[in-house]
Image 1: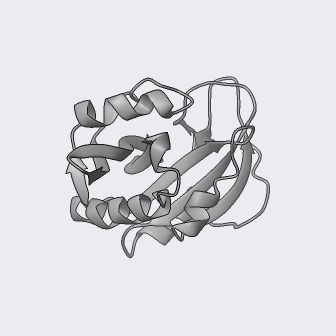
Image 2 (image 1 turned 90 degrees about the horizontal axis):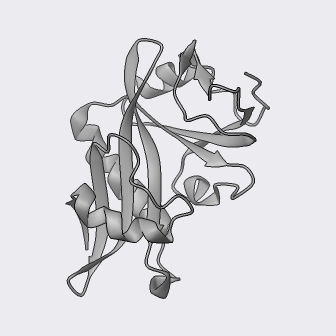
Length: 166
């Protein structure tokens, strides 16, 4: 069963995530419950870029005993719930050396390409919106309302498949 969960309910599952700490400022968490236990969690955090607030898919984790669980369905459920809060655009940054982000393609997200990190982090319209690390990230986005695609174009995300520099 899908449902909204608290950060405290999501936190124990993050031990299965490559970065086991709860992201800063978790605003929305959704999970899958089975047998009275949360078996998968998705954590969303607000980010600001270009003078607007968007929502970032910040972390997901699942109990490894449920290896056949379709995480893309949890992502889709989360997006449908987030529409209530009037976010126009959801984005996520997938570490290029860890994953290709195929789960986001399965959940009908748009691929914006690879962006190399600056020493300060990822920069969109002059705002730094991601923690500093080396390497590159795959960027995926999803319009949550009719303005979402406009926001993606404004942030230079709607250029599917090209390598983004900067």
